[in-house]
Length: 456
Image (cartoon, rainbow, N blue to C red):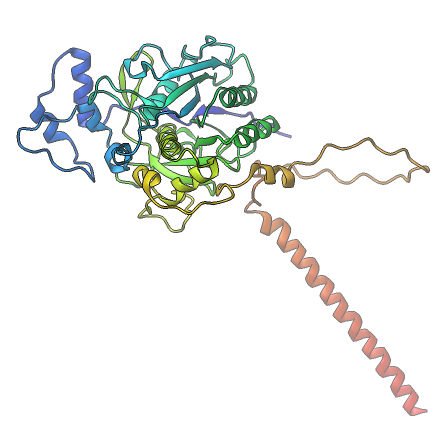
């Protein structure tokens, strides 16, 4: 039997792009070399937000970094800010750690921990040789503070508090990855997280049983768990755990035009909503700005929206927070169904999620992990009863065929029809034919008997 190693990776950000986004490129150049971009250049290169009006003549140009954050207008974030900016809500970022240096995080991080064995106890020392900045990028999208009232990178919920839980990816981690996530989830819940963001993925839809308890613990404590769907560009062709866990809000990625990202989004039936995953601005642990892609960035945008909803509606439980987000999502133009395997319920809309009238629900629309466990996890076997007689020897069954690829515990595979329904149908047809044959034979015997009786 061939064993497949579990590959774990951040769901986005492995490729930092500095292409496109002329406004941000100009801003980065100004920050790095100390020269100012002229307002006319910024204004001429900036794409007009879908819902933003034009500046009046003589009005100061918008900060170039803020102008690059197209999702603030296009996805209703500024509209939601008229009601709330997320005050009083805590978002746990379970990732590579949130850097201490950036001014964008001053006063934002309320606590932290390290579960990797590689970081510092406060969770603020970036972990990992390759993706150490990933946690800072994610956190800046969720709740970055900016560098001034109208300048610098700002998150979707800029008044929410952050919790930094540092984890280690890859073979260099001192603690098994599944254990890190389970411990990180429990720590986040115990330290007051209202929303947990997981911008990470695996290469399989299955998950360790330790995650059953960890995610149930979060759900039982009324925490919204937001998970990135994963990226096709990094080799994830289908949604993997933890995005497949019932009850989480899984986020797919779209480009600035609202179309499914070819590289920065996978697909699957567990997709809840879609959010921007291309040309994203991120603050690195050292305070530098980058332009990056990935559903790792789409997830914290939605986590920030969840924080806005929780701040605006503190009486709502997690199920209704998720329901407001998916029910107020805008239809995706290329979607073929609702929910759609690429877009879920549509493109997230922060303003509508905060302000729209949405009927309440009694259950999480993204499913129940408790019900899934009841159906798919076998109860532990009890002690075997003492035999009352000499057992009869039974020939062992033939060894089962080794699957060529792992299957999902949530759904039948595409081979279910071939290996399940068709043989069953063939057996049924054979049984029917045998029955018809027996009936015909009985009729012939009866006719023969009747003819002999009449001849006498």
